[in-house]
Image 1: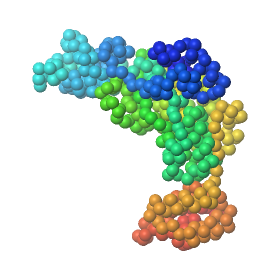
Image 2 (image 1 turned 120 degrees about the horizontal axis):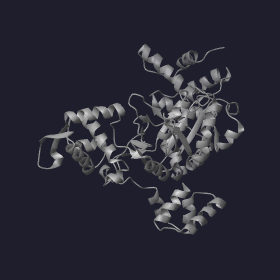
Image 3 (image 1 turned 90 degrees about the vertical axis):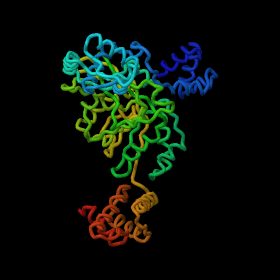
Image 4 (image 1 turned 135 degrees about the vertical axis):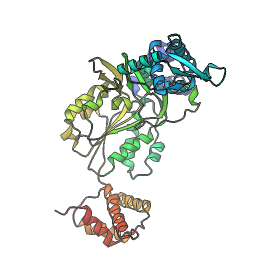
Length: 468
């Protein structure tokens, strides 16, 4: 990241090679980010730093600008045309995500080869022509689908994707105490934990959340995603070594409208909120490699690739379908070098960027899961323990308010004294929600309004806990 940042500033004549080396030396001695060290030395301004991290993909004006072979674009146009039946150049361009002039070039090639014909027009402009594949074109398109069934947006060259990931790095985010406090305002988190979460998020480095189950580790991990500022550009798909890998995934990525308008950028990229990808016990080593579909004959990106420039949560760590130590060994290179490797079904291996804030969450004892060497690689480790009584009370009140149940201090004290203290049960944050949900379920069954009374809380406790 430092090399890319420095090189781009040198290319723009904003700094010299000598200034870059001095800034790197200052960073080595005093820490911090390279850009902040350059600002401190007076080499660049905050505006220069901001502009570096606010780039957008430029619209390709020529075939060469797309980074794709013209023959590939023509073949992709044919597959789309076969699926559409009758089409126009603008309608086809909207699906393939390339400018109309480039789509027109491909159509002209196909018309010369008698694979596309004009069947009508709604005006004099080429853009109004209604087109369709000829019998020869249909045969050719069908043959292409047998080779690869991908017929989505035109992919982005892998090197452009890698450069964009580096520019949009998670390391560039700026997080302050106020933004962290606001993000966590809807949940009960102690000041001690917030004071440790803030620097961890801001650093973009790995975070290990551990402690007894039911006390908010998963909620805290998910809330971190709302702290991550800004948006990033993500391609629908990339082309690497002649293979197509789809990346954009509506189940993990939330698209937003660009401030300067969608038509001002390369349509092969989607502006999204910084990704938040979460996996649990279902994760295995296979989910960390590209998924080849033998029927469609193209690939889907692995989870860590979908999480680039965002947050990757490994929840319930230690309960995956693979030994924890084996899984951790798989993560050592990505965590240390910020790169990963994926292998195509042909055996070819390529290097991909690994740029994400990784959060491991577990309710198992860390020293029983991982060795000291790995824990040393995790910069931040935060224990999410049982809540204090005051915190538990506040959580209980909030859950009551959220469900329209009047909070009763006398009943709450009865709960604490008669059950938690007498039965020696530790307070758990999730108990508030679960006990009150039990009261609500009973009330709905009886057709009455849910109320917090000594009887309803006693019934809820009896239903929830197993007496040994």
